[in-house]
Length: 161
Image 1 (cartoon, rainbow, N blue to C red):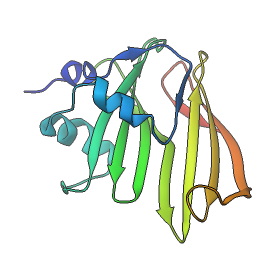
Image 2: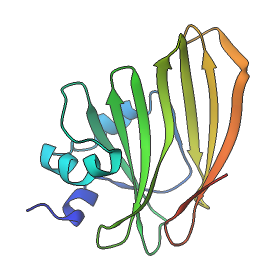
Image 3: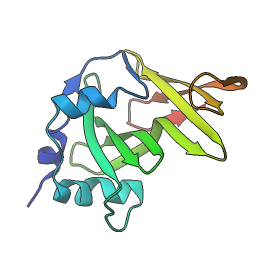
């Protein structure tokens, strides 16, 4: 039987600040041990709302936030067909989910590439910069850019702006 501590141990503890962008997952996928299928089904599928596996979806453990006291904060990367996202999930020490939120992503759809890049600082504040482009690179539309913030509270709740 897989326990929550087994699952959480796959996420190396990292001190903040950290920035998550479009290519950051390459570092995590080369440095971190992959999650087993059983771990993904038991701990991630219920959070992501996934009922069955498909061959086009992949999950990579990224990190655990060092300064979380009284809860555990984990980040993983999810790759789907034309959609990539980083999810932050907070748990009680016994593994019960407190909260979760997609904090960075790249999505392709409706003729645009939408990106959100995130920085988490030492105070567990999350700054997200979002924007879109038609061609995915050089044709960035500044009218689509916006900033938003979130914060991980002392009880593990993720408060959105």
